[in-house]
Length: 228
Length: 228
Image: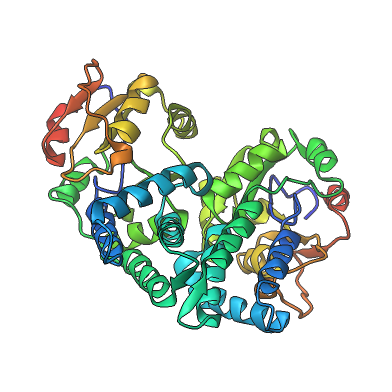
């Protein structure tokens, strides 16, 4: 990829800033609302309901809140404790108001790349929520373009690259999720650098080894710089 | 505005296709779940809760569903009927799956303008939901650019116009909502044509007369053509 890249897109959640661990903490709080049930069983029910609804709701906190409520209804009898509904709203609102904690080396790396490459933020999720997080992060100034995507399939990346007036061979995606940031990008013959994050949502997991000439995995974000 | 406009942006909901009446029907169904309460009181409670949460949730069906559940919890005692929660999910899912019914004259007008002007769809709401509606509508082929906005304030329009490499004096917005499609556009000195729709959400209402050299109100969408 050396000397070939003109545009670098960064995933946001768990690439620029902490995110997934907040969802895991929220799930823990949710599963503890059911005193007589095993936490893992509750989490499994929630996950199944989220997967059932994913095509309908898309990604984001509001869909997660609706998933918790549907799970609560499913795990209750004819009546649901109103207090538990309030607890779910609390968990959701807490998620919506989480502070933005930048991951190590992010700001330094963006500062270094800024002006030399066209930098883009390309993230999945809820429009308002991602805009709010970007604003809180203070990173907006580094990005030429912000793309909030309803999904990260090859077709979505093809559209983004076209919109940016760029070619796949000049486009690099940097992200933590093999399923969302790496595989679909390699599928359209662009470049992808993985920066793994310690926590991955089951839905985003991809355990198999990736062998592809356009793919590199690094340990930290600043290791992107010498690759270019 | 004659001979001056190069870019025309269309609002989507209630400008290109039916939308608001579906929400009113959903509200009716919701308020009828409470047999012992007056429908208007329930609708008022729901509206107040929606307004309280608007900044947090933004626009769209998922926020509306969360609003119905919060209202249900508020209007119930210590226990909520699980069946009522299921009914709310039904109402929400029905909304998400509504067919797209184009308003009169839309397709003909877009056909006429296509190729002569740069056409844009500029809509507020949920990303996935609006993308899905656009796809169902069959209108995507007419639009050079789709902008799904978390809000329609002057700053959002300024950003859109900049992104389109356009000047306010060459930009026309066509829409049904004075609050979202007309006033913020006039505020940045672009042009705005109102095509009123029979049903307006209270939150979008603006009763005062608008007198502005860049503003015209027409009765139907095809009346935009002779203005250009």
